[in-house]
Amino acid sequence: MKFSKTKEIKLIFLLAIAIVILVSLITFDQGDIKFLTSNPNPVKHNIAGFVGAYMAWAMLFLMGLGSYIVPILIALWGVMALLEDKP
Image 1 (cartoon, helix red, strand yellow):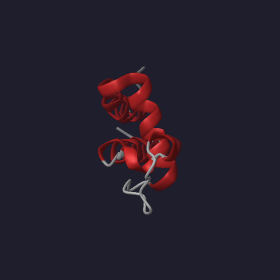
Image 2 (cartoon, helix red, strand yellow):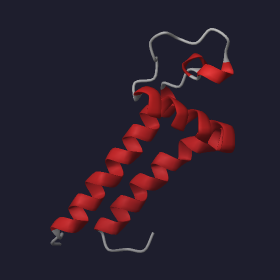
Image 3 (cartoon, helix red, strand yellow):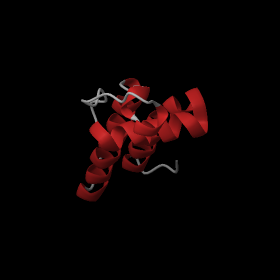
């Protein structure tokens, strides 16, 4: 089976996004969000930094523990795009 370069790039891009989201969710700390606490962390505990902390907070606020499924679905979407199947 021969894969095109654009499909491989799309797979790598989607896997990178999925990894960043998963790392953000796993390392989420409420002390990183300034308006959730009166004593915020001076140094962000989230490995993905400022953007990762707020992204993880928004996902957990909107979807709860179901937000941990999102990176899995994104990774599967990339693999299915590589294999030319419909997601």
